Length: 293
Image: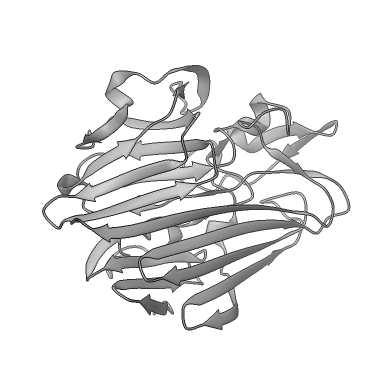
């Protein structure tokens, strides 16, 4: 049985699974799921939960290989039969419980240099509940003695997509090739644009958007509930899988997919960030929930 740590504030209930990548196993408002709950019959993995951390990179590293500081480096391929390394390694490790309060929780992960990342690091996740708000702050602490490229993100799956409408606005999007790798940035086409609430189009998109305005909304009209996702990230992956999964993923991220192979670190807000020894990179997301007036 997976240990869940449960917190509540007002109508908001949070369950966190430290052993499953420090993932959010449930986020409910008035008993209704905001994020996809971990099913009792699901495989016990972070990517079956409501949200999980992306650290020390987001999305794909092509073939699990990249060049940095004059070296060709390899990281472990970690996603079934995918030829790529995906979403870092934080989601595949058990996190340890640090500080805990009535409305908050800190998780910690200490990682040596290994096949998943060639440098040692420490991760923290801080969960904070308010009456109608969940705030999560993810941090990468560089414990190596050299500057390293780092990326962060969150992978929330919003529940009951067939009963929802979404708002999501960005200026650009990267097209993917047949190997699920980005190759060209274009203006957002109409079919992927949600400047006003409309129903998500199942099986339509799994791409990284740029020039994101830092705000996305999910509305469940029959329940009269709206969730507003916000973050300082200017990139976000919009993933609307086939209807059988019945979720919408809106993922704030610090860099585009495969950025480590496409862009020099620190070269733009689409690139990986260069983190000096002893320094850290942080990213927060907030999910604010309200009942319709």
